[in-house]
Length: 399
Ligand SMILES: Nc1nc2c(c(=O)[nH]1)N[C@H]1C(S)=C(S)[C@@H](COP(=O)(O)O)O[C@H]1N2
Ligand SMILES: [Mo]
Image 1 (cartoon, rainbow, N blue to C red):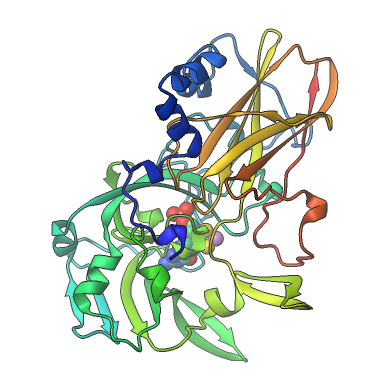
Image 2 (image 1 turned 60 degrees about the vertical axis):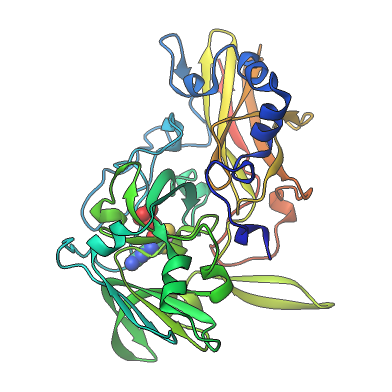
């Protein structure tokens, strides 16, 4: 059983970040941590009256995030992140087909295939099921420095358990693959033939049975917004965005691999690695979020600078987040004590008396298994644009 399959509720110790657990155990550490920066972590996210953003010199001056528009992609200006939960109207948006408007009244979810009993549910049926809530942050598998990491968000999702629903339907022993179909449709050219396809993603049954996988109808306490898949979406905590199928319409259990575009051809990372002693080019579907951190904001208050960034991973607890200035020693940053197992982890590092001139800032994250976020040089040879988890050096000029 992998760590991700362990039943974890939001309030259990396992769902908390390592630092928070340590802090709660030691009793005083939490207030000590808050005192380190002079004020509680969350209040350091909001820009104070005396505080100003220091522009990154690696970012064009006129960089602005696009407004949310029907059918369009939305990414956020990560310099503006100042809350633990991303507001629903600023959470990034990606869709590959249309954005179907499905009323709650017309909505049906069907569970089909290798189950003892096929099920059809209305929204009322789904809302009548035991409710679960979980904090989960994720990024698009294609998120990168190109958009300064803007294809990202963190929210509290409310809904019901996928596992319970699958148990109720009764998955047959041959049922090893669970396919999730959205209600959005597009035309795909496959070997010169135009075919109508729904967005589809799949998971092995053992992943689908994970205790944290949910069917979500709420986002930050509000009904799931249209652009985020209303009225129902899949949320797979710890996985890249693409796994979280929006406008969900059908769950199908089958006895073999599903190979639709978003499993078999797109969101497939091509990388060179050793496989059982042989160096091979491997094609692998984008699934769990790789260990990643990035600096996204620097603020100035008099002579003091605060560096802020985020961490995302698959839910493995963290050992540390560290910041290095101009290639100097790694120094421990402070992780938001509000962080939970699958949320993003915002961090800050206080930089006193920064000297005038250009500086390079970079962060790295280390998990409890001792895995260290890769430098750009340590990244595998990987020509595809998926899974950009390398350390991301930023540059700023101190006046
Ligand atoms: N039905 C459907 N679900 C989808 C997609 C889609 O195109 N159709 N895009 C996926 C991708 S690639 C990402 S990154 C996330 C984005 O979720 P968000 O728009 O709520 O941020 O949704 C995923 N779920
Ligand atoms: Mo994506």
